[in-house]
Image 1 (cartoon, rainbow, N blue to C red):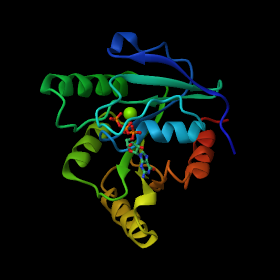
Image 2: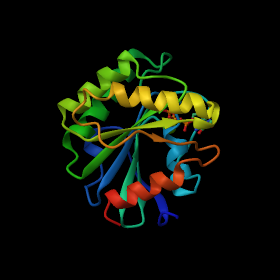
Image 3: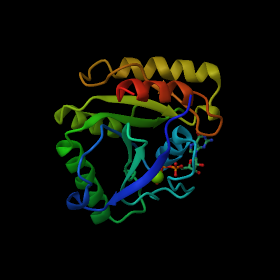
Length: 196
Ligand code: GTP
Ligand code: MG
């Protein structure tokens, strides 16, 4: 199962430069270095989204069209200690303004490293999503770095931790952009969501 041709079409550093909404959107958020851009590339089977070993790499909201079906939206990471405080505030405002005003936003994928659990700071960000009433789904990333037993355990814990969130939808996904584990399943879900 492959997605239609996938290409970058807009980058936004301010809300004024968000592209006019045309297609349903699926957005990717999470800490710096969690693997957002790598996952977008793995899903699209390309290297269109730029990635880096250095956290804080993606510095604007990047929009990728998946044929004429839907857009994938790559966000800057948050929680990166080496970024200036004013930059952090700017990104937080940029992400929140995207989340609060995007009419065609179908779902937010909240990426979480499979080696880590739900932290207090992540839960605080989930509360923000709840406030804006957007559906979100957790995606455990870098699953190649944990054993199958640990992954199963982590999955159960994360699911339990989400019980209090009304806008947490569907079960957490588990993926690896390195081995492509879970990528087929995620593409299938995205196509279903976007009605393709
Ligand atoms: P920012 O743009 O800084 O917010 O980071 P990001 O979330 O877009 O992360 P990115 O995709 O740039 O990946 C960060 C690092 O993690 C890179 O060195 C990737 O090669 C690595 N990485 C991403 N996905 C995986 C994965 O599934 N497995 C492993 N082992 N490494 C991964
Ligand atoms: Mg990135």
